[in-house]
Image (cartoon, rainbow, N blue to C red; front, side, top):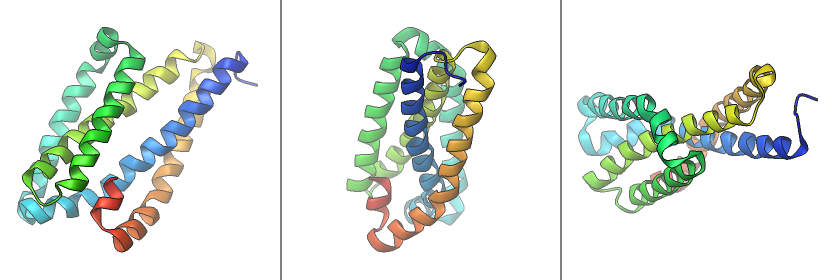
Amino acid sequence: MIFSSEHEHRLRRIVYLAGFFLHASVAVNAYITSSFFEQFVGESNVGLVYVLISLFMLTLALNAQQIVEFSGIRRTIIGALIASLLTGIIMTTWAGAWVGVIAAILHSAVTYLLVITLDLYLEHLSENKITGSIRGIYLTIANLAYLVSPLLSSIALERYGFGAVFA
């Protein structure tokens, strides 16, 4: 068994499960967000929106370690979860306004911060000699989420619209 204690084993399983749902959410958004943006900014400006998202993500990625050191890993995860939920709610309720587009940009960036922070937390839960195995399991689970997400997002989008997918 690659886990050093039962407590750490349980925590890793929770992180694996959270990672699955987080990556499924990221993948669902990746598959349908361009259509969402196209409704409000036009097809020719969707790329510009993705440039803004990438800039926010890059800024967060470059500052993630400092954010975690300043607030702590748990506070960062909780804060990013709350921000992700709030921006998701805004996207579903204000889907007809620019506020929805701005919320989607912030949602993507904050969700990316969650991905980074979960990875840092997983690293914190593992010993150096088994970190590769633990991360390998985590990444396999994340890839499974990416595999099932196109099917789930297309079904939800077809049946319920953008609100159900972003909720």
